[in-house]
Amino acid sequence: MYAGLFLPDDPGILRIFEEKARAGVSVRILLGDPDSPQVRQRGEEEEIGDAMPAKIRNALVLYRPLLSVTGIELRLHSTVLYNSIYRADDRLLINQHIYGAPASMTPVLYIDSQTGNDMADLYLQSFERTWQAATPHGS
Image (cartoon, rainbow, N blue to C red; front, side):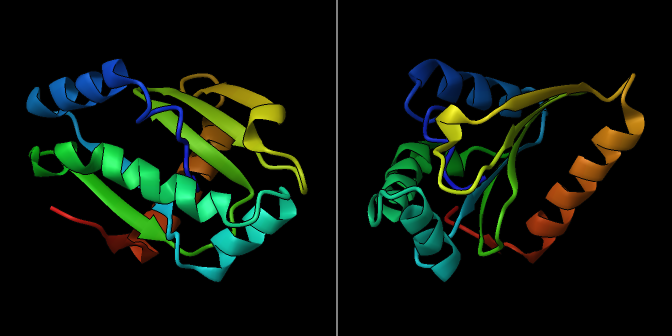
């Protein structure tokens, strides 16, 4: 995902991330690198310009307290994204990106990996490739 700012803006979500990590769950957060040309381009396409990198920088500040928690990792990527992937257990929410439209205005697919294995696997493989190429942020 590029920003997913609705997540770190919610103290309850941050608390859940911390509780889950302390219980042994791996929490991986993958954001667009605010200094990458891909993020700048996305901001231009959505007609918000420099607000896109600024939103990501804000998310990084909000996530900062979690970076010292064992089990929570945050990485920055510089890929062009076609969707944002949110996963909890066997459930995925896929926010489709549409050229020129903000993520809040685009469709979200719900996939249960227990019933939609092939589609879920494809999205999870995409996330893994992006994660592997991403740069760890903070600690």
